[in-house]
Image (tube, rainbow over all chains, first blue to last red; front, side, top):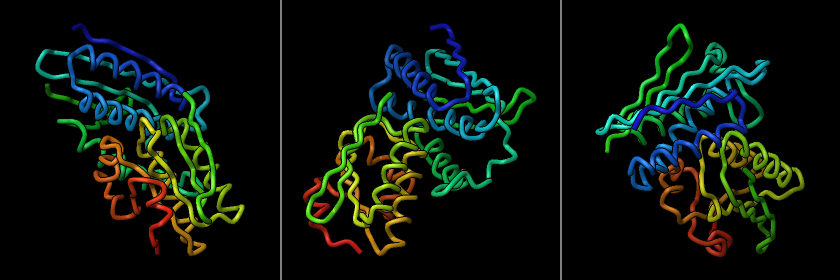
Amino acid sequence: MPSVDLQIPARAPFVGVVRLALASLARGAGLDEEKVDDLKIAVSEACATAVLLAEGSDPAPPIDVRWNDDGDRLTVEITDSAPRSDETADAGDSLSLSSRAVMSEALLRTLVHDYESTQTPEGTVTRLRIDR
Amino acid sequence: MELGLDVRKVDSRAVVDVKGEIDVYTAPKLREKLIELVTEGSYDVIVNLEGVDFLDSTGLGVLVGALKRVKAHDGSLALVCTQDKILKIFKITGLTKVFPIHETVEAAAGAVTS
């Protein structure tokens, strides 16, 4: 299957669109429902981090999502340009971004076979890999 | 994407029946409802997650925030959940040690919580 590219604004209502699209692609690629659920969470975590960090940015920076199926493994790359310098700032009354980040990291590390996040000139690239 | 939130009373506890997906978009709605309950004096709260199809760390954060709020009033927050895919999220993040999780609302209402 060729790669599929999606782009959304880094705003909360659009995260569900990515989740829906990738779940459909994953089912089409033959993943079982447990792996589909795991992928949905991992993708949502990466996108939600970008959305939360982009709050206050106007216009919203884009989040680029690339799905690739090379046969043995499925990869999803999520690239965003949300600023990381405020990542540990307090996000509000009940939850700081830093404490959410800890839970998010735990989910990402557990739910996919490989996960890495790297800084590039284009922004932060989060790579998720799911083996068949 | 809609999040359904219905509030009812079971014994003296407020039960929030949640339906739909809890993510970065919908979690603020749940947070507002839980804050509203505590502000109104409901300090013993049960959040029923049986109708939840999806939960991520933003939803977990809201639940942790609500737990802190009710604890500040010597209250309690219990969860109802039997779905493996949702329980898995609590296990991975270690929150099964933080929240009492029950199989039914009745069991949660009847449980002695500290």
